Length: 327
Image (cartoon, rainbow, N blue to C red; front, side, top):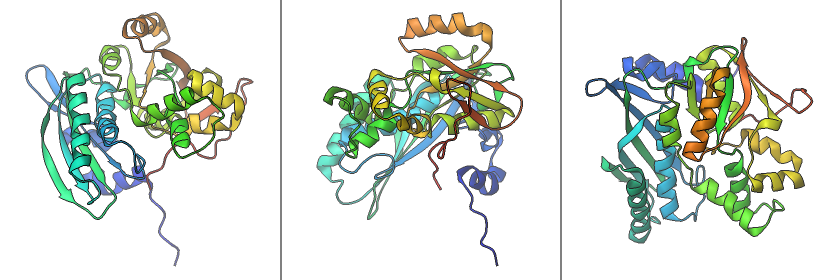
């Protein structure tokens, strides 16, 4: 008898959990839920977990582990154009995460609560033999009908990203001891980008009404662009030469061009990926100046399925790995 087919993350969701979704769950085809809030508003609900040894490295500072946990969830609120309200926290901790670890962990949460104007609303705490597993359920709010979903892209529109891509993927390689051939300061910058995402809340809120579809990049540019295209029923094209890179990433790629695969598919960027009409470029340039966050057009959406990545000569690149796979 043949083995049953392997189900990836999205096939599992579609088969086992989408049939359970209520109206606010959006068919589990987006990365948030929407429920009615006070008059003229909607609450945006999001939960994400991080696991030691998978999403952060054993030995990473507990303060930064806490901040990454909170920020990966805030990034999803940013991608809907929502303002954060508060969060619930669940911790499943092994004995090694003792009181000293928790002291530093809670200090990281406190620092980000002050920075982003939110508070802890509740949660749960349990023990496990390991590894540590941490989860946040974040709550945001947006004007009714203004949340920017994955499904709104239209053929012919351009696709944009915020900030620079690939830093976190290169940073985890550096944190694991890979010699990227860059200086100490550049290496430290890349590792910091892996440990401490920058949720683009201000930019995301101001993209509501301009962006037609939006999500954040967590599993890698190509994979996540594919998810947005699938939700919108379209295909996508990325011009690899237009993907924005930091000085540190440029230096690493100059030494080893093969690292482009990590830049395009490595994940953990937590930058915004969105589509908008061609006429939106002046408004987006203005937002970039006002928020201090770069916005770069990297391709377009068209009729069809899948995502193609083109080199500078217009030839399609063959990518063995297009993004992080959870299963």
